[in-house]
Amino acid sequence: MPAPIPLKDHAKEHRLVNKRLLACGMLVLCVTCALVARMYFLQVVQFDYHSTISENNRVHVLPLPPARGLIYDRNGMVLADNRPSYNLTITRERATDLKGELDAIVTLLHLPTEDRASFDKALKQARHPFVPVTLFYQLTEEQIAVLAVNQFRLAGVDVEAQFVRHYPLGPHFAHSVGYVGRINEKESKTLDSVEYRGTQSIGKTGIERFYEAQLHGQVGYEEVETNAQGRVLRVLKHTDPIPGKNIVLSLDVHLQEAAERALGDRRGSVVALDPETGEVLAMVSKPSFDPNLFVTGISFKAYAALRDSLDRPLFNRALRGRYAPGSTIKPEVAIAGLDSGVVTAQTRVFDPGYYQLPNFDHKYRNWNHSGDGWVDMDAAIMRSNDTYFYDLAHKLGIDRLHDYMAEFRLGQKVSLDMFEESAGLMPSQAWKRATRRQPWFPGETVILGIGQGYMQVTPLQLAQATALIANKGVWNRPHLARSIDGVPPVDRNPMPDIILKDPRDWELVNHGMQRVMHDPRGIARAAAAGAQYRIAGKSGTAQVVAIKQGERYNRLKISERNRDNALFVGFAPAEHPQIVISVMIENGEAGGRVAGPVVREIMDAWLLDQHGHLKPQYAAPGKKSDKPHV
Picture 1 (cartoon, one colour):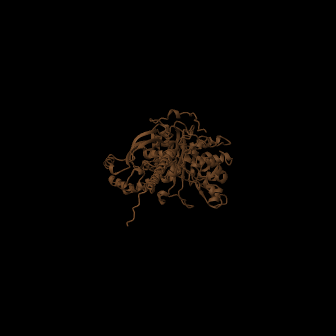
Picture 2 (cartoon, rainbow, N blue to C red; picture 1 turned 30 degrees about the vertical axis):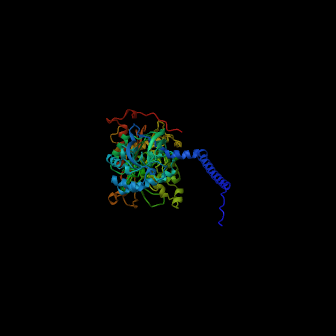
Picture 3 (spheres, rainbow, N blue to C red; picture 1 turned 60 degrees about the horizontal axis):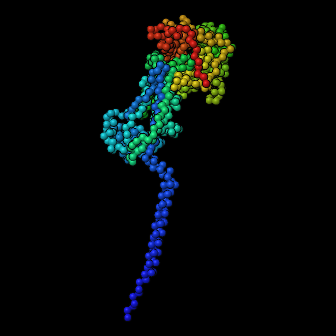
């Protein structure tokens, strides 16, 4: 008999279905609650965070670099300005194939392989996101057209109009104004990342570097909305940049050009100062170079040519050149002798053509080997008598001589705003013990009296020491900036004036320097011939290589670059000085004959009008100007 078929239990099935439905409903409810909770967390709890991220994907803050301040000479002629340039830039975040695009740019523009390496170097420098990097400056119209046609291949690549520094007078002020250059990796680590966002260059030398903070200005910003490709759709907010401050220098273009003409093609330097204010009227270092080469990045070949040149055009001789001053420091040595009481104006020394220390056989030669006979202070300066100053230095001793020269800041920095200035060297017993581990010898003091030996000074220091003679000890530190945005410079560390026991000693030395130029026996009388004003001057001829005892200088036996340096310092008009000049000509040999006429030519350019007559303001004593105060 077949088994009975069980009846369906509808009640049980109903309970099972209900349980399953309830489980599903609970599951759906839990998932819904989880989703709602997650949405609440994302949209309410983390609203600020996610809205900021979203906004950053859509809105970007772009820097607006400030226009760099302009630099003028004292008469308003532009020495450094900004010129528009179409430059090639790339934004890394927008590029789809960075390496391929850079290779394509080099190919399209027919650039040398060294430019490809510079692209990589520029992109490696630290920067903010979405800030474009300038790859190439001053695109030609043809290059712009090629890039426009191939724009579809170059995502993130743009041609932007930017301002680039320009020096309209080129080499004339390369060593004083200096130049800007592209910010390197080392500099980028020390600069304010906010202030220099979007800025491609920074002052490297000269005024451009010293007054970088004033010339740079303050960066501005733009908030822009972009699409998915990074293209700017609209500007949401704009903050204008604040341009850098304009600087007026004390330099005079016409005097600078006159100084360069007077110096000619010779290697050397010229520094001209206004003794009443300390303003630098001209500063020449020759040979020079074109600073525009460095603004957007100089090529390796061009830089190597400048760097390796025997004439050292990159070397600022006026500020960094350290030279034996020769006889140009005899006026300062005379002041030391008079003020210390070692000698008087009437003290006489017999000159047979040489000088000997007591109990020593060595002869220290006078330039005039036949000797000048009996000479006093006035005649010794006029004739640049070495024997007199050998004897004076020996009587002073190295300690007193060092201390007096220190008051003139010889061998020390003197400028207010020239960071490249070298300190030079004024030796002392302590210096020699510390550096040479040797005692000081009497003969070293003797030759120091005529500016030879260990002593090294810069042409700027020579000019300043001469300005102190002209100014009777009143200190005005040399400076290039005449005003910054209309405000004169501030000397926060003014030097104390040189106070002599008898102020008439200044006049004694001044008179001797006038006789150098105007006395029939004056050592540089030819340079002052026909002058419409009185000149006080002092020549100097400094050895580059030593000459053995008993031998005479023979230029034919010495290579050109080992011949004596020619120096000259002077001021005019002698009664009320308006200009002080120091000239140094490397291997020029004769200070009075070679450097003296250079000084005269520059003085004429400053003191005479276009008709060759003395300007009225220099015919009588001028009104003294105040030096910068704190």
